[in-house]
Image 1 (cartoon, one colour):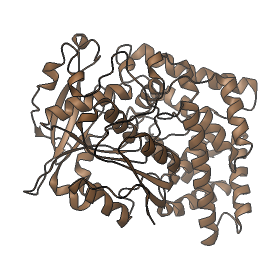
Image 2 (cartoon, rainbow, N blue to C red; image 1 turned 45 degrees about the vertical axis):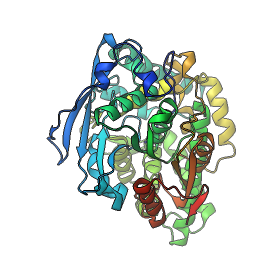
Image 3 (tube, rainbow, N blue to C red; image 1 turned 60 degrees about the horizontal axis):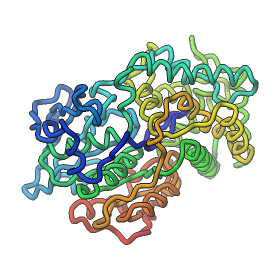
Length: 495
């Protein structure tokens, strides 16, 4: 779940139209889907990796498949063990992150289990090389990211509301057909077509961050097609958009407090005590609101500084040393390191372009998924109420207000966030990191409780998601589950 802060759009679940299927049989009952389910993937060498590549045809609109196709990029790294178990599909998060290249990361994510699976990555519809949705120019993206999402006056609130509305209008204008069909339920149905094209009776799936929502929705739509499924950095699909951004605000406040405590123990260059470090970080953010720091031909503004800080918090203490150096430099009037951290996090190139269509896809997917969003004035009241008790008020204001663009998105009654249930038998392994800033542990607990077969595994760690973070305990349980289907006891904790 790549969360970008200025403004941040939360990752919310949606439901498509009418007659949502319960199992693959119902999915193929819609006239015109048989050819999609019967297709054979043609694998060729990939241009940019050592994987094999193929294109998967899926309908633009599952309710009206005759209206045309979307072609999705699929990558595969074949199992190397003679004891092959099957294919395993990964979604690394987002929405808006191109996932095809993650086919080559099997060893990193799966360790000893990797040789026994064909590792499958894919760019979801509207993302990367799968008919990318392009509804935000580089200039609009700069304006969107640079907008002050913690307005101090009616005029600032009006400006922020205006740029938020421009994002919605731009998507409607530049992608009139595609933008209405990129929600999570569309992608979940694509997953089932991919499962069939891979020749698999069930879907083995690793979903990280936003990928956990995608996996949970798939399990609810196709309960009889769920294989071995791991949902790491889990999201509660029943949360409203406002609940999600408010939860993230608490999560990132917790993460930054833990950074401060760690920094002081390590003789922090920001200040000698925790209260002093907290005051200086808040003072920096407050000063940047009115007096940005010049960095060559650009400026380090408050929204960009927040992106730089929160981007560092996605990792654990291995990235905290860099965060300490970035903040220390900014306090001394050098905004270049923190601006560079922000650019890296948001995908901005030195020439002012953006490295992918992440921002277009992030907004389009999240806003279809998110349910109703309050108007600017109501959302600001919610943000101010929570920020009044926050350690870092600007973080809370920015994160909660970042949901405002979705207020201007069309709504469909069927797209309200809801609980998911999934299959009754078997197990779905839900992993939560205790101090995950982007997907708080509470959400993993809630998702595991919703799912009929949910099993909660907790890692007492920092940073976003658990697999691949160095916990041998998490790795051992994930590997065992993928190889044998045996999950840990519900509520197991990895120290």
